[in-house]
Length: 315
Image 1: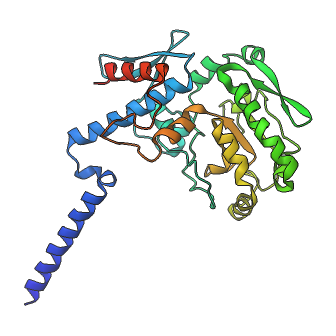
Image 2 (image 1 turned 120 degrees about the vertical axis):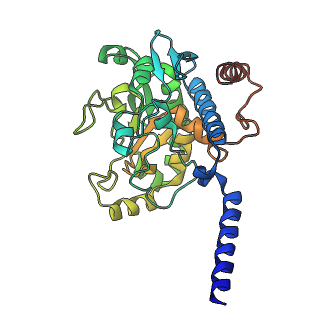
Image 3 (image 1 turned 90 degrees about the vertical axis):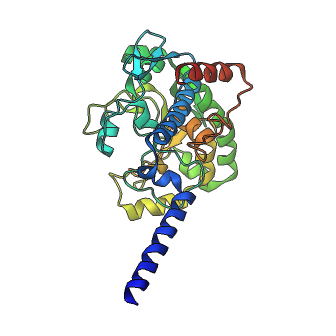
């Protein structure tokens, strides 16, 4: 009798497990056939390629498939940027030496958040420096030649005019400044601003800050804003009090918010169109096998051109 009961329980466990796999196939790729895993990978790769081409239209001129099946972005200058080096990396390695696949893998959350993110979740904190140099300037002198002034309240701040970055910040301020006049809580988080362009490396690293490229702005400073200044408890309280409208306005204009990083940086907003486009178009349908570009404005001539080129290269 006992054996029959054990056998019955084992059978039910297997059936329940099989049912769960059917309901949640994406969470159990170990049970997928190699061809199915490859298909999912290719779908996500196509989505990533499209987001990059749309985010940097003047600077990514084409994509290329090498003889060893590696995919590259061909830049305006003639240099190449690798999509995926196929190396296993931990969170620190993805931050210090990312490829494009690493950078776009964590999906930035466009919805408001109520809790600090997990420490390993930093969407947009990894950067492809070859691309930033291509778009915003290879040297300090080149970057500074691209800077223009953007009015933020009564002050003007330097921001990079290349790749529509300064244009995006102006659009933010057209909506944000009136809100600061209506709401004291928003005004307190925006003014006085802490700065934009500052050519420097990130503390304790040899990596340039996004401020070095003139594509980031720090708003009003609070001692609870930064993960190195504050405890998680202090950061959580600051996050709960931070007006969600500020992040929403910035995100609408292709900025990521450091408040949505596990290594929180709540006063920090950074122009990263590739991160926002990935979240906007593919955040909730990351590996659809129907039409991989579903949700993208495919009727736009440039978008269609990019889609056709990706289909031609990745077949």
